[in-house]
Image (cartoon, rainbow, N blue to C red; front, side):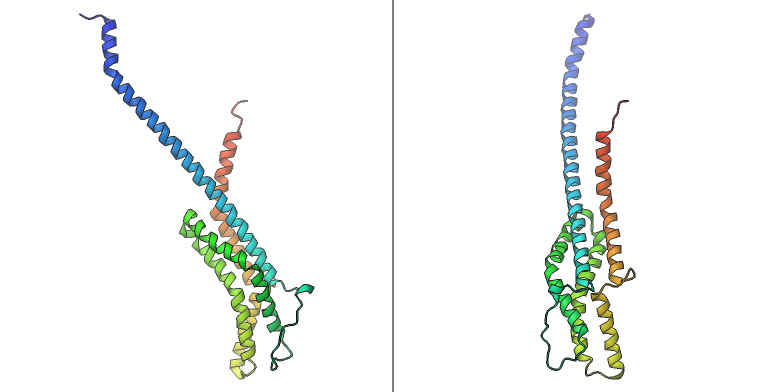
Length: 223
């Protein structure tokens, strides 16, 4: 009969492969867990950076639109616009559309940058947010469209009579409302506010998660 010591040794020899296998599994799990944690941290950091970039560019676009639509004209913007011989003396509409298009040209790079960012944003945050950028595209495109439309309707309305002239006048006034900011009920102002609200809601989880992690790491766990 073998002694208890010998039996214990034999048992340990038999268990050694199992212990070794468990050690390998534990080591693999630790590596995988570490990689996943690094991946989550890396993706999370990239999302936060992208959210900050998109929000910052959005506010640049918002400021650019307000600049373009500002009813006030600076002294350095007062230029002599080349007028055609048959242009009527009352050329306020044409002058405003001309100024809006000039201002738009100075800010076009900001709009292009924002359009480029939307593809990165949608790829990272999901295409359920595409409506935000479609709304912004409508606003950005509406300004040059309105400026050009005023130019043509103003010229065509000179020869129009009756109902046709009334339709053109109404269309011209609608286009002017796009070019000039009025009050808090302004359609463009309301659309910008709505887009900002949706964009902030889409990016909020990034900053909330980052703040939660910061609070967790800086919390005093001892009294």
